[in-house]
Length: 314
Image (tube, rainbow, N blue to C red; front, top):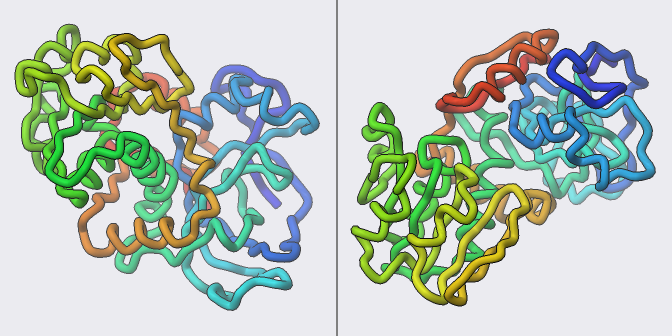
């Protein structure tokens, strides 16, 4: 089986073509013939060694990728019958687990992490959904802002930030978001009620629209302490890269980890249905042949993307 991964942690050039044994689905698992794998920042962290502490007993090669779309080609014993051979599906993949990540022709995952692909979406678009949308959903969960309340979102033009805006609107919330001037129309299209210019002073601009501060903020652009002035006393900050403070004024800082929702089948399927209904927007920036994974990683690290890069394993 062909895959893309690293033997040694390093820059994009560390990614190389691998020939690995064909994985087999065990009890409660399915195997997916991968057609597309989205490229996410957490994949870069794996490549550079940022996840090494989470897999002390694993040995190289390490295969990145937490988002896969493809077709089920093997069903292990003890699955619940919800999934079938030949079904088009999307999956969240735990690349720190025993089977490795989604940058491979075949991947074995728990059936609980797999749901049907959104109807009408091609494999590339479908692969961009689950990890980023689940991250946004978990971030809004920790904010727990009631219906009619207000949240702020940084990095609203990005993958997680865009989903956070759209899911907040589904929840009946008012959204204050940041964006570069060229992205203002895009972020308003996601449903943001107010858009302020991103960059230095963004927290003050958000605070001007919510003089008492917002009760919750999703930090999609990882501005960490720089977002705190926008948040009300006793409010909550959802962080996506593990930062946990310190904060001030009784503000809670809650790191959000996508794997916390990786086997929540009910909510994964809810996200799939929301994508089908148009409540969530699937965005592909560019599709690369799998062999050009290093180029995709360089582009991701350069920043400025609107949508996800995708590797084609079809």
